Structures are given as structure tokens and as C-alpha cells.
Image 1 (tube, rainbow, N blue to C red):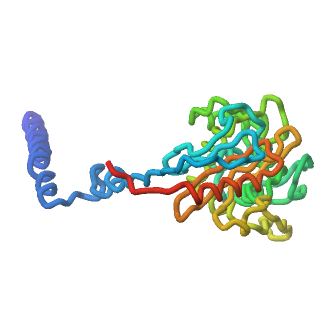
Image 2: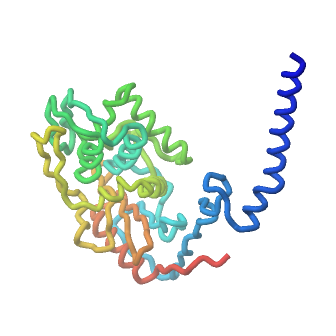
Length: 310
């Protein structure tokens, strides 16, 4: 019995000695030869070593464009630098630009390939015409939501939540609170007017900045038209983008439109200027697309980037 105890103690001592030896000699040897095992957290390929600081944005102090919009903002997407703005922190009604956070929430809680069955019709506002009994994927609903601004797609995504529409809306508000957007509050998923459903031009720019980090969103919003099919391909929905600048203004790559009588015209634009991205937000406008074009033309003449210098 004593011999077995001694053997076990001897084995433990040998293991401790080996660990100490590896710590003293093995890792420094790899360090000397400038190589490390791939699974170590300080691998040369980690994100910190690969990080490249974004270029710094500059803009001329020229006369600002005259817009129809009473509340707008233009930011550099990479650095969040505010380039132009007016009344950016005043409350506005976001209308269907709401659907950007609806899409983000859905993508955050549902698998893209998850299938659901339409068990209730929704007919308020612009709808894609989902049929009772139709089976459709989350991805198809998100696509219809972003391209065609389909209210019934938004309703179906919200209604699919385990706690119903209220549970989904709670998730929407939790998401914006997580990112510190204190001047925004949602009471619905499609932007139908409600006094307690509000945001600001600045907060919408931050929602857009978050949205463009998701490739599903950026690839979808740049499409002028799509065909969304039921799972069994017996039902097709041919949908055109509500973004009137797509294919007309080459710098525009999406994002999201909105309109109600109370909100006026709204448009969040993703602008590509020679590989650098700007986000524009135009709200309470009678000419949302014309205002966005003015911002783009101004930016082309006045905004430039230079490599970051530490």
C-alpha cells in the first residue's frame, strides 16, 4: 500500500517537473525561432496584430448643402466622424427605417435557414402578400424586409418570437440599449406611427453603422429587385427595392427607406466614395432622395481620406 502511494507521489513530482521544464525552455525556444503553436492565444495571427487603423477622414470647411430635410447627418462609417449634421439629436419618427433594427434583431435570434409557416395575415401598410399556410425561411423574410420594406415580413418575424410580438420588440429595444442609443425607443417592428416610437438622425446613423457589419444586410440592400420563394417554390414574390437611387447614383449601395405622414420622407444611405464608406441619414424631408444626392455631391467635392499616422 505504501509503495503504491510512493509511486503516485513520484509520478506527480515528475509531472510537475515536466510542466516547469516546458514553461522554462519550450515556449522561449519557440519565441526565439519566432514561431508558436497555432492554438496559443498569443499567436502572431491574432486580431490585435493584424488590426489596421482606418484612414483618417478630412473635409473642407466649405458652404454646407441646402437640404429640404430638417434633421440630417453624414458620418464616416469607419471612424464614426461626424462630417455634416443638423438637429442630429432631436426626436424624429423613423418610419420604416425601423426595419434595419428589425432585421438585425431577427438575424441575432433566428437561424437564417429556419423555416416557419404563415399562420396569420398582416395587411397594414406595404406588404409582399404572404399567404396563409405558406412556408418560408427567415432569410427570405429578412430579404423582403430590407429590399421591399414589407410590413407583413416584419410582422411574421416578430410574431415568430417565443414571447410573441412584445418579446421581439423588447429584443429590439435591448439591442439599441446595449449600444447606448438612449434617444431611441421602439413600440413596433415596421415603423407604423406611434408617439412613443422615435429616434434621432444620430441614432439612426449608429444603427446603420451596426447594420453594415452584417454581410447578409449589406449584400441584400444593394439589390434592385429580388424573387422570394416559398420553401416548396410554389409561391413566388417578385419584389423591387424602395431605394430609388440604386443603379442611378453609382455611389449608393443601399440601405433603408421610410415614409409616414408624420415622419415625412426618411432615407439612410450607404455611400461608397472610392472604397471609403459614408452613412447619410435624411429625415422629415419632402425630397429624401434629392437631399441624399446633394450630400453625395458635396462629399465628392469636400471629403477626402489620408492613411492614419500614429
